[in-house]
Image (cartoon, rainbow, N blue to C red; front, side):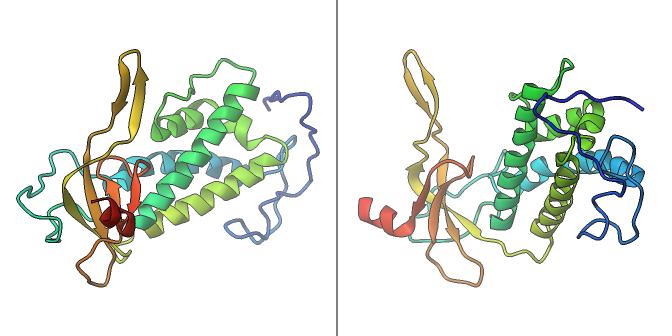
Length: 237
């Protein structure tokens, strides 16, 4: 079995029984942990499968959040006319994608900081690319990490469930309407000539269940950009 190397401050205290025994998303029957590990053979195999499975979700979740390329808005509509010409907005997908991104890049930082081998994983990768690279190059190192291997496996099971629920056909959808003459003023890059702003159209999000007034104004290209409560928008426009 490969002997994985970890920083000196990591104390390898392993148990005889897999730590995913009797926990949610784990297994009921006690299974022996692999030597030098906190997980059984089945859980180590599941670790790589889950990394690969999660790698497919970022792009799918993004389709439920941002305006798809080629989306056309009816720019003749006034702000008070909430006819929906854009894709719907799925808030659950937004939350799931943000959490998956945060978790993924937490692992990226850990690998870059602590893994002794030269790693192809880097911070400029998109989340899906990083997860696939981890599955190929770092599954064993991650799943055998003392104490954290079982925790990361549990995180992946939880994230997989969250992503599936967000993409469920019955998940609530917000209608998206164009805010005429509104553009996102989020700074996306700072150059020698000055800041570059996003400039994407702003859209209003109308909550599920009817109504005609948006509850919030957001950037159509990136949901992490400007988010403006409708009350603040009315006061300034």
